[in-house]
Image (cartoon, rainbow, N blue to C red; front, side, top):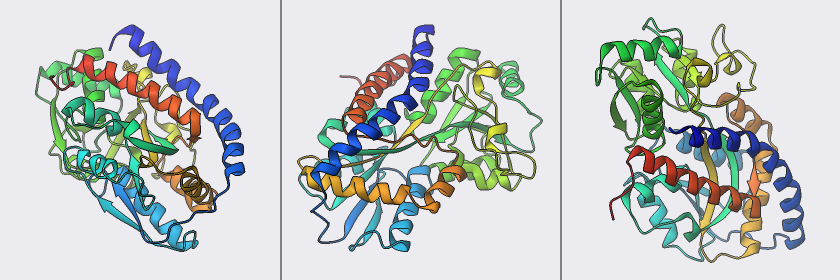
Length: 345
């Protein structure tokens, strides 16, 4: 990753929280004026453009549970996984459902990477942005039976072994996990065999089974294995320490995991967890879902979920969310180009 790109990424990561605070205040007022007279008249399909067991799937099913538990909707919320083509199946499905307010989709950063890598006829502007729910972290994990206690020890061993001797597991090809893997390779001079899996849940299982040597999984996708002493967290790909101080394992909290840049890897990457609707829906219909997620985020359940998964709880709506999406699309264009992952025209 070039120095200028790293600087941009780090700066962007530091500024995002301050932007979020202003956005919540400014845009929340605007939608309060619009009101939410509309509400669903039938079941709402909640599309997950990823496999079961991964971070997006877990968040969608958690939201479904909270809505049911607190009776936040008169109609049911039905989670449907459409993971084909690195999420292309889900994105194209929602794109094709223009003006249908009974379909929403939870998005990852494959919102950007999938069309860039595959050339499918889809762009996030084909949908209606509703809300950024959070940003998801990435952690460098190894099996707890290995001798590596720090990321520096691990990357030193990878380099000493020579190219293509160590296996890095991740979700999908030419997606977030592989982007981070390439960034590590460029910074450290290492060269991994990258092995793609369908979802983060499977990735964690493969690392526990020692079928790969490391992963860059999201916290929530590996937390149970970490708590059980099967995996070891080496560093987080953020420029700051995670804020959660409650113990997850017998001795460690999320805040005990050091930033990767302190281990010689100045890589800063967080993944979107956002909600979109099809294109062509009304402001009143968007307002309903903004209000719904506001109620969800106000529950103790949500706060517990944020801590369990070590999420950055940044929230954006309206114009500020659109500005963030525009910048992230540009950043991913640069990252994908640098990694050689852009679809050939």
